[in-house]
Structures are given as structure tokens and as C-alpha cells.
Image (tube, rainbow, N blue to C red; front, side, top):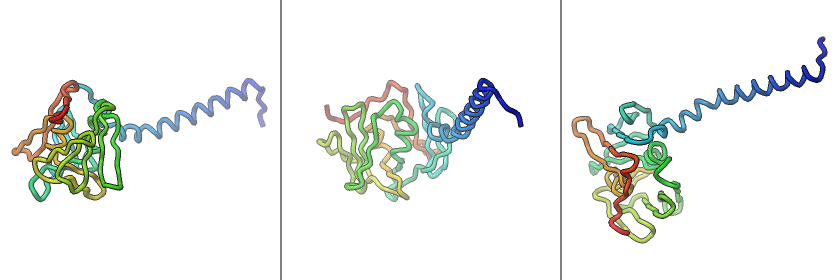
Length: 187
């Protein structure tokens, strides 16, 4: 059995602690990458969301998604609110997304001054608790625990230019970082 003096023992302890910290960091990396896989693309963004696909194409790169875009029974493109705003745009375009289980709604707080509320089953959204803006078509829905809203209305409320590509059966968002200027129709 080898005996160590205090200096050698201290160095061994430091090496063991450093190794443990390094292992924790390495084990955590896949989780951190999964949480922020979309949020690494500042500046110009094109997001192509094929109907029913398990991926989006963001700036030409294919990314797996858990909740695909779908067409409602009325033929309206429905998009998952939290995934789209939080994972793709949220890190510089909103303050928070609040789920209210009492009225089954999602409220997006933008820049600390605007609130946009979507209520499941309703055909309108609310700006700052004052203005009801009717959807062009469709209603907000919860599907398999995920809150979906009509794509065009989310675009209108959030200032995202949304288009449709019939050839690829995809909804497309094109915008630059500085182009987000929501249209609320109100001041």
C-alpha cells in the first residue's frame, strides 16, 4: 500500500474531481444540443414545413421535429406554437410563452409590451386583452397535447411572412432577423 504526502493526495483529489466534472459535461452535451438545435441561426431564416413530415428545412438544413405541421379538416395549415416560436424564433423574438390550463390558452408575451393570446377551439386571437382579431379560417386546436394554430394567423399576429408552396405541399416562412414587425391592426 502506497502512502501519499499531502501535496500528492491533494493533486490526486483534484484530478479525480476534474475527471468527474468532465464526464458530467460530456454526458450533458447531447441534451443541450437537442434543446437548442434550432436556436443557432441568427439573421436570415427560411423555414420550410412540409405537411405531415417529421422534419423542417431551416436555412437549407433538415431538422427532425416532434410535432409536424398538418392540414385541418377545413384545409388550414396548422402549426405547433411553442415549437415554432420557442425552438426556431423565440430566443430573440419573445419574452415568454404562458400556458393557461383554466381557459386552455397560450399567451405569447412579446418584448414585454404586447401579449398575443390563442384560445383552443376559438376562431380569433386576442391582443393585449383588448382586441379580438378573427382568424382568416379555422380554429386553434390541441392535438396529442400540442397547441396548434392556423399558420397564416400566427404569421399575422407575430409578423412572420408565411407562404404556401403547392408543389412541395409546404408552408414557408421567409424573414430576416430585423423584419419581425407584427401586424396587429391596432396601436
